[in-house]
Length: 271
Length: 317
Image (cartoon, rainbow over all chains, first blue to last red; front, side, top):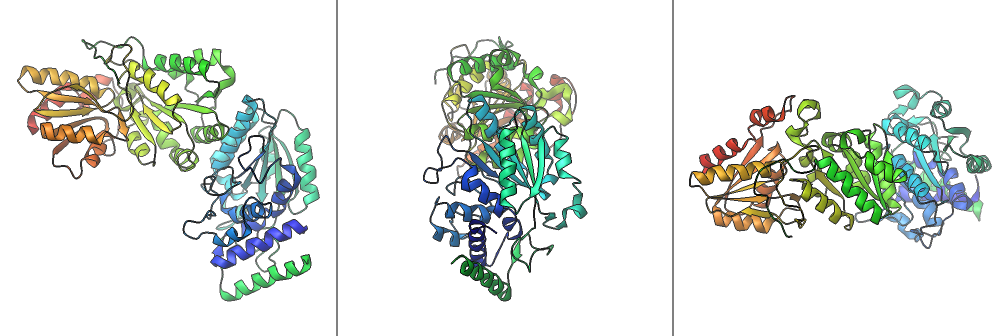
């Protein structure tokens, strides 16, 4: 685990424990991807979140908001203290990502399947406007149940949106259990390749591998790129990894203690 | 607002779809942010003229209305002005959550045109007959909801909307309509238009029902009943002040909807007058599904004809 990824995981744990519940599994699985995106891959300015020349990130799996909020706070979009207001009345950090609430959030998401269309729309607008900004979008593997995802996949390929990178968080679990048991997606990489995309599959917890996949996407012309991230839901929290009910965790006191111990241990390692 | 009524009820010079194409060409020439979105109905709405002139700003998405709403949201994030068309039931029923969330809740702007309003879907039949679109879009907070009475109004309203950053839904008949307004008439979004003054009752209508209401008012006049007629083309936000004024003046309001009486103009009028003492009756489709047939047959079947309006006024005086 890189230092940044570790810091993001510490913040996720602290914000969820403060509230006592939240989307832990799918937040933890995308941390490395966010780390690479926000540490060099994306052209951004945390002091100017609405900067016209920025690259865009759309978290289509909007329930992973806590991972994005932690990343944004650590990158200086807003004060870290705000993280502890997650899901409080009038908070700027609601359970699902909201572009009108949180500095640095590019699109409102939470009804699955919708973020990818908006991301494709941003990418298309950039082509019409003759701009080189890039658009990144993260969907979950469970989210691939939504037919709209494939509408957007067809659209992005037809319009040759090579400024568009789709990340699929293949953590193999959705709310009710294993994706293969609920509606088997088969080989996601092959499936999306069949739509004409450039696709590759990497270890979603290996930042060097993710970085090199992004480089490959930059070199790919005329077609969009999909990077399937082979991930572990609740990655880093060993007693919840592989737990089929880790999508939304409601913690008892014992679990809270275990989670905080883990965060403190990581913090000790960083110091 | 400066309107002049036509003297006779004749088909308008242009079909509504031609008014759409021509206005959009004009707007796109002046404003490079205008972009037209379509879900494989360009042949039906006849926007090939626009496509020829602005191929880079014509996005025929394909048959995917849900994706179309999201793509529009993305385009607007980059400052573009999306105009979206589909048949009204696809633009609303089919893609409602996308319209609601990716555009409405996300505070993004687009102009959505829903065509083949109500019985004008005619031979496309019940599957394609939108009697619920106004009800759906009225439920989206901050959304402006409009129904066009003729092409003159449509051109003026489209032009005005291009300068207002808002999310709006415009319900239209796609092809031929009766002309209501003379060329050059202008309209004020949010204000009802009093087309005729009378003290016995007030008929409030929108869309194709405006011409029917005017026809009915002439028949009533011959029988000594003088009604006011209001074109309430802005259904949301509705002109409450004008409704209250005519409620006081005439004591009875009849609303006319080419839509289910649940959720449409009639409901909007009732909601606006909920604390105002006046009798309101709603003429419209009585909670039924659509069906196939020529428009005149359907107007009779769903009791939307000028004669039905005359009858409803007389029964309630």
